[in-house]
Length: 108
Image 1: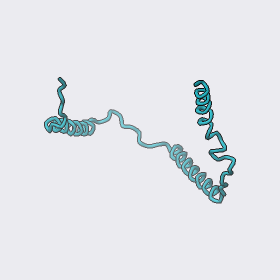
Image 2: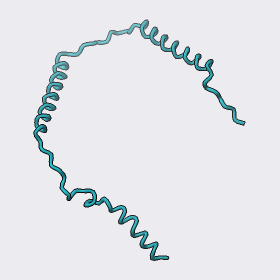
Image 3: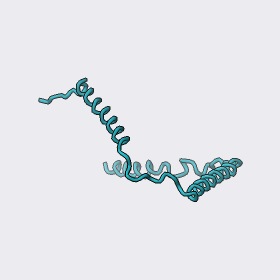
Image 4: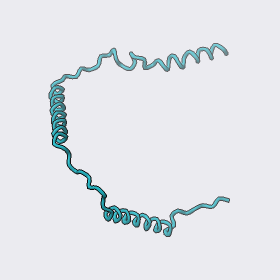
């Protein structure tokens, strides 16, 4: 006999909610009341700031140049030479179905 466990019991849900809320508040209070032993350095050197700014500006200008170059680009429509039926679109049907069918039909 299988015993079905009803997980929709409000007593179970409420106890898990209390545990959740208590854990969140306890973590918040503990993290706010423990002081770090050393104060971390919160600033970057000036060369790192300038490097980040330079890379950002360079990326923006390259993106702008690419956008301007491709703005006047004319798109060519594909020719009939590269359509699905001209490529190997029907190869699986022809080579993987018809020869076995022919062999099986002739062997009858």
